[in-house]
Length: 101
Image (cartoon, rainbow, N blue to C red; front, top):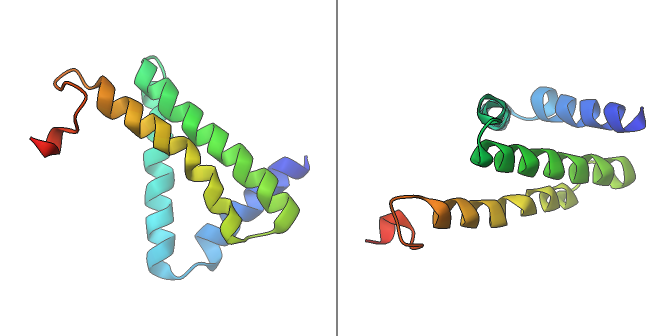
């Protein structure tokens, strides 16, 4: 139950205590991350959802142990391999980022 409480506390801090612009940005990011649920039937959607959930678990554990600190940024590490994989798996390219051509 403490995990759920920590997750809700983090959400409250981000959406209620941050200044207006960071609050809007965080709300937009939450909405974008939740869209992976619409694509859970695809491998790419599952990868995005796995990155979101894995990062959230790490952030909640860190928050419950050390509070709202910069350490929470470590939860974003799961996006790095996922983004690399998504770029290299794009059907229209040969492993190079599309914008480099």
